[in-house]
Image (cartoon, rainbow, N blue to C red; front, side, top):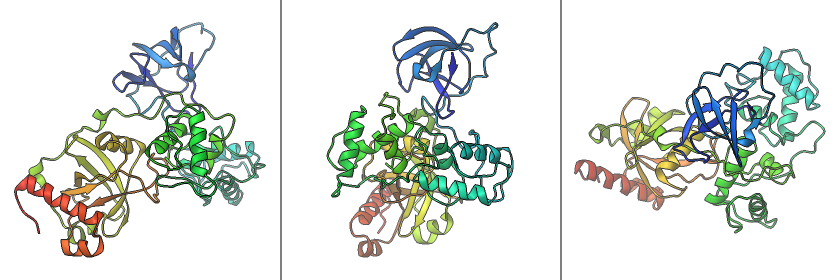
Length: 407
């Protein structure tokens, strides 16, 4: 058989017929040939290289036996899920494409746009006709309309629900964490459809953690960009008759991937937000270590005000953060943060996605708040509730680490 995935991603070979995090043998790339040994319902027993195990049958296509055994592809390290989304670097489009770009990946894009009936010159030059075609494609598919072909556009253009030039524009409004039913009952309608598709949640008109997780799983299983937001393209696919039902295959993570070690508590400082932390952050990505679980993950700075609005850098970082903290909540967690200067400082944060974010494929769907030491009087005046809760948590943690009282 041959590995065939809708998004070009790899598939995990497992030691048993289950999606346990502990039974991953290796990842097998899309297009690889392997030997079928037997069937086990939704799973197929296969041999690939030196490994014998199980693979989900939906990602296999039976082919005629070759005249000689094909040489196996070099085994790859385990990836993040059973149908791993392709990254921008691994896709047919090797880079972000924009006005002035040239090359074979531009030609491939133009050919795909032409297949979808968009008017474009197939010449390998990202010219004005290509910019216009990409903008039309983005508009019809509910994406940010900027004429730049990045990772989200690359995923969408290969997705089963992609809309061609003759389609009507998507009319759905995005729904995300924290949203509740309005007059149109959009959240309840969405939950009801997800329930029909086999996702476990309650139809209560409130877009909470279970709805968010169901959307992440649906996007994963249907080859969409994994944002955790029910955007226009996601809703279009959900209500389409071709929407894939829940297979139980959801993005997962082995928590040991994040247990890479952290700093000793004696090397962690308590640095002031306004004078020592904020000036060095900018739009940086920082490493966060959660001493309670020993898990590390990356956060990208989003907006800096009285605290740092941040986002998990990738889907893997979201998964590691949630593996460490548990389901999304506003609960305060004490963490160690490695600044761009190389210093580690004490911080506190939650893992509840809210409002807006800038990363569309990290499975988070918003931003979170990362807090550092501030003056208590200033915080009490400007942020008397949640801000004070974090400041008191930081001081309590510091006293526990050093015995030092901080006013």
